[in-house]
Image 1 (cartoon, rainbow, N blue to C red):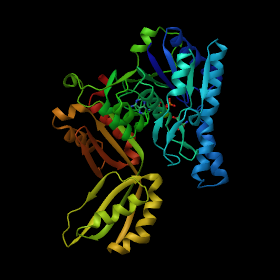
Image 2 (image 1 turned 90 degrees about the horizontal axis):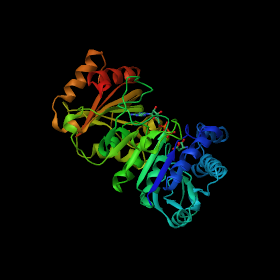
Image 3 (image 1 turned 180 degrees about the vertical axis):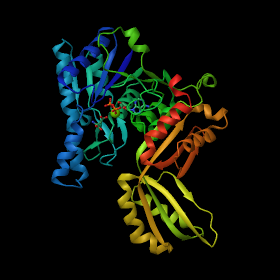
Image 4 (image 1 turned 45 degrees about the vertical axis):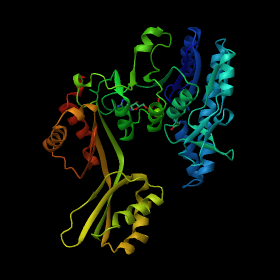
Length: 416
Ligand code: ADP
Ligand code: ASP
Ligand code: MG
């Protein structure tokens, strides 16, 4: 009997009416003979509300207690969904992360899943029950409740699917698939029927929040067939139609030559740029600057070191905007004196825009086309970084949406 994992996001679980619809959809799959595991998120807005409550008490909340609070949104939704299924005459059982258990490390607010015990899940499925597991949460070796970072229910679902060796993981959300770019920013964005796993990984890591990046990593590492589709359709639509809808994350790069060279455009507003001015041009400087940042567990993204003319150079890099103040403190308080830099300047009004596509491997001139498009719009490029299948630029945040729309048009994505 095929085993399917469904994941429902916040909007999909947003009201008791919506939860009843989720129950109808899950019951329909169960009636058709599938074994079902369901991973819901908290009701929309709930996790934000809980975190805001914590911050009212403590502006920089204790991370352990914050996770204890933030994880409760999912506990409510699993209970409600289980009841909604029972009301439809189904046998359903809901588990919090610690009850499964879903084991994680102890990195509160961004914990990583280490293992999932499938014993209870398998026994319940064998007994004909629908199993509901809270997304976003786990438990560490000391029985502390942890959360997996914002958007983490995607990762819970794909990790559960990998653990139980599900035939497919269906991620139900408020859009009907993965689009060429965020449809909230570009109304001409088109749904992709398929996206390669590598492209999805780049899109997620470059800021497309439709899937949490770690969920894509799990899908790739364990080859979990994963599809993104809408929960806002008629829950009783035919299974045949439903299984063909949405966007499939594929592990093959078949016939991409015929597809558009660029599959999508991702963007991230939450960037900050830091420049260390007048650093001596000698071995070890990059290490001294970035080593100190890494030690504080801050992720560095783009990096540029200028050519030196007089033995001195400038060193520029980007960090997530939320880590900007901390990075500046570290540099000003210790690193500046150690390396003898002249000064440190920063800019928090920058955004990153990236074009992504496996077709880049077999086509030249993509970077030139991207830069010309931005030039035509009068947008200045501050930094550039590339990989085999993506080109990213850092620009003033004021022009981010303009850049995304112009690139979407220039690469013909509205005709995909
Ligand atoms: P959920 O609560 O179901 O997890 P999210 O809000 O996390 O939903 O993710 C869905 C949202 O992701 C969409 O509403 C859309 O605005 C946004 N999004 C960003 N980039 C894309 C993209 N390339 N394709 C589709 N949606 C995208
Ligand atoms: N409820 C969590 C969040 O808002 C997890 C999720 O929705 O995936 O980030
Ligand atoms: Mg999400």
